[in-house]
Image (cartoon, rainbow, N blue to C red):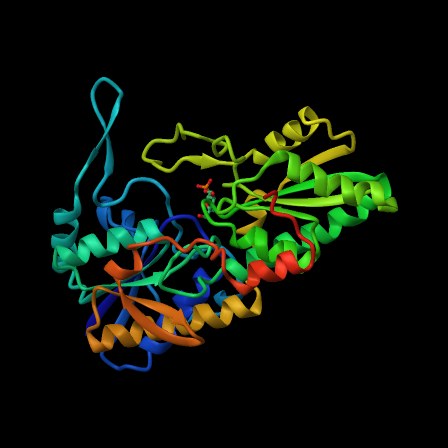
Length: 364
Ligand code: F6P
């Protein structure tokens, strides 16, 4: 029997379980393949004792509607930077990639499918360069991978953000307030932009367009003082003023290398006050609600397609490649290409024109 190992890495995202199910269901149609899962990304392989579980029909029954990942995940460490505590209590990172590749060979794995975002796919590419037969599946609510039009989980996050705005509108209206909703997305404004159009916000601030606080204030006051008396601002966590920086802090969690974004809603609120905005303002950080729970149907379908395609790529021996969704087609792209650039909101896109066309201000 041939063996494929599946793992989920990086932040969780609605649709991960649907990918896992797609891989397993497709693989079970081949008589000579077995699917296994590594718990917590590569930790299941690197830990002693190993945590590798068989993925059969029973293990994946009904999981496509569930959020999170049955395989668990981690944003800390990895085969190239495994955290080790020194005698003095400090932590250093060691490279265990060669050891892991050797271990996978000894365990008899013929292929690995890594479901993860840009960081995880960079690791996939580096492992492929070292000889590991690996395939990537793009995941992230941020939709910031350049070689695919959509990553699964994104539409679910947009739905969650849109529903939050719909709710904020009713309370903003009742109290004549300005509501600021902060959404995720790291350095890309996709979630904010889609949610602002979908729910009809007055202002949308995204990392791709640094804002001028006076322009934001003008737009708010135009709406606020026109008799309607309320306004909604959507701000992406990575948004920043023209002369300023993102609101972020370093993490104190061992092995967590990313900056932790969050809090721009409060900074923006203070900037508006300082700029003379007299409206009552309330802030809300939507946070991980965008990542939890049941994936919307679009994400389930996309994730299932990714799973089936990933296994078919294993059958074809298309290693070093990542599944992608381009121009309404499920396709594939090299991991190198996939991780070369970031998917920012295109400033010439019709989506942005649409937002401006319905009067949304970007604080320009
Ligand atoms: O990349 C997905 C994401 O949810 C970002 O939008 C956010 O900045 C980050 O992960 C949060 O990470 P964590 O769950 O590790 O705090």
